[in-house]
Image 1 (cartoon, rainbow, N blue to C red):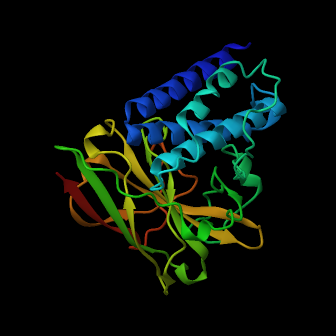
Image 2: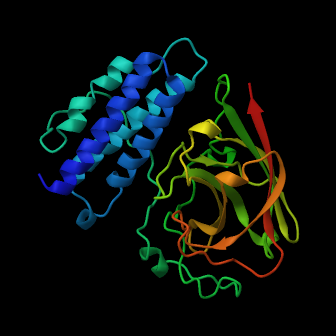
Length: 310
């Protein structure tokens, strides 16, 4: 086993145990966080190119199925149904499979299929796919690292999550995405925004959420008017974290959904009321090292924040 594979398996195993421990203790919000973040890491590995992976194609299929089971358990914990669809004891059966993925050769214990893949491209690969004709974006020279084909059926409704349960002394944050200013707003097809919370290294701290497709478009604005419930109490967000907003739209000629621009807000900007934040050129820079404004025109992302404290 290579050092890289051993390191990955150790990290995944620790995350898996952390999630099931939270689940066992009844800390469901924390368990859901852990399951969904691990599922995304496994899905990303499952979709990696053969020469960029430590695992065989069969092993990657097994990783993708484990990711599906993590999503199923997460969905069961969020369900209001009394009948749990995927139980904790079922999920625990997968820990030895993940731990021994390099030698596992039995049939997978559950009849599940990998989640339909989004096409994930390495930074730089997307440059071959797309160049913007827009003069404001010329020179950016790249599409989004997470460019993917047309969205999965039903994705027009988005993947928004409900507000977390309140905890004494803890603050929850609701961000209403009101509108985004773009000079060609009316030409964007099926526009939506992906919201994520990242640490300084660009690692997800909460589940990623997609808004529904925009409610309406006008000359220079795309209107959303949708509430995003941040899936972690403000006090639990790590120092240096940021909330990212990636504006995406469908390109029929290329037949994929592309990130057009992005914006972000940092922890010191969390305060109740309205705010506008600047738009940056793609590709999305989650580490915030090489930021380039999208345009010199006064076009921004318009937000409204509400803090909930018990």
